[in-house]
Amino acid sequence: MRSINSVAVVGSGTMGAGIAAASAAAGCRVLVLDADRAAAERALEGVDSECRDLVSIGTTDDDLDDIAGYDWVCEAIVEDLDTKRELFERLEAARSDGSVISSNTSGIPLSQICEGMSERFRRDVAITHFFNPVKVMKLFELVPGPDTEPEVIDAFASFGAERLGKGVVHAKDTVNFIGNRIGCYFMLSGLHMAKPFLADGMTQETIDAVLGAPVGLPPTGLYGLIDLIGLDVMELVGANLAQNLPPGDRGHEFTEFPAVEKAMAVRGQLGRKTGGGFSRRLRLDDGSRKTETFDLVTEEWRAASAPDLEGVPAELGEVLFAEGSHGDLARHIFGGTLAYAAGLVPEIANDIANVDNAIRWGFNWVHGPFEMLDHLEPPRVIEFLRGVGAPLPAMLATLEASGQPTFYSEAPDGTREQLMPDGTVGPVVGN
Image 1 (cartoon, rainbow, N blue to C red):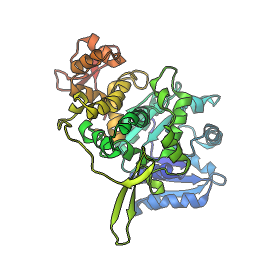
Image 2 (cartoon, one colour):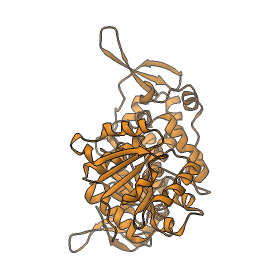
Image 3 (cartoon, helix red, strand yellow):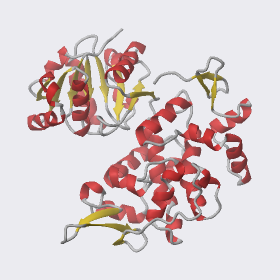
Image 4 (cartoon, helix red, strand yellow):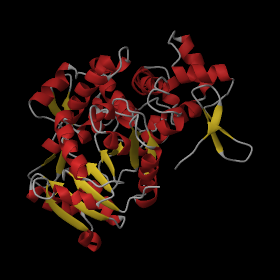
């Protein structure tokens, strides 16, 4: 068994600093390295004062050999494959036998990082993807490569769950893994699918409200969530998806922004980080604040308006079966995301529980996609899809063929079971 009691983080940006702070708070000895010593020093600002003495800093030019004394070497630098591979060559030469090594990449496949690397590297490496901010977000996606030893994954899983208190999700080495593959489909497809509703007079405030509590999503909805993340980040995600999504994946339809959002990104209207994206908060002369919305139809700022939820059912998810524009919107964007997720197993994960955990922990949905389908009653969903001539996604077809009424069930001993991709029933394991 391998164990992790010390962590060397290479790269002290937002993610690297967050991983370092979380590891120190867990009682680990931590080393933070960066090309710029001042950047490494800034990472100390996020470390709790009571454990700051556990953290050392240095530079990748002068102190790289120091990683030899650490159990886990975590790369958290810029999302560029060539830059990562060059760094990993240096880290591999400096780290000690028995250590484990990982990348915090949010979307670069591990197979591309590992290509041509040493046998020892391929045996000891994994992707350890945290969600930002690391201190707050529970999701910890763990992705092995084809040659990664099981004991390496066990060490990362134990450390993530027991020391860091994270929810460990086991993902496959596919583009954007689980959380971002589905969550970003919701956002990117939503920007396109919302256009007809905007043209018909539905406001962005109403769209965000429908895609919030009525379907079990946070109040940020669609536009508020993208404002939080940033249009620049979403544009990079789209480019990565365009390059790495498998042929035939429906996500290819939505990898580029619509014209208005593309123009917003070009002029630097990126979201909260730039003072405004789809909305902004202004301080008036009298000290009060005013919220404005960037109207995607007129392409001008206007006063924010109250959402129109008249006729939207109060019961969770029932808007998906409602008549009228609210129901149509929910079915196209949220329902389309559920269908997309139901077609991705076993491509992105070996079971549905990992998918549900990733979305709940990474995007704060009330229910993961398969849990939500259970809440909506799968036979009812299947009947609806057939009624509109839509194909059944893979896992819904598997469920129907299995004769099971739901994706999750209770075993005789009271434990939770799940429908597996081969149509059998298996246990739900993990945290």
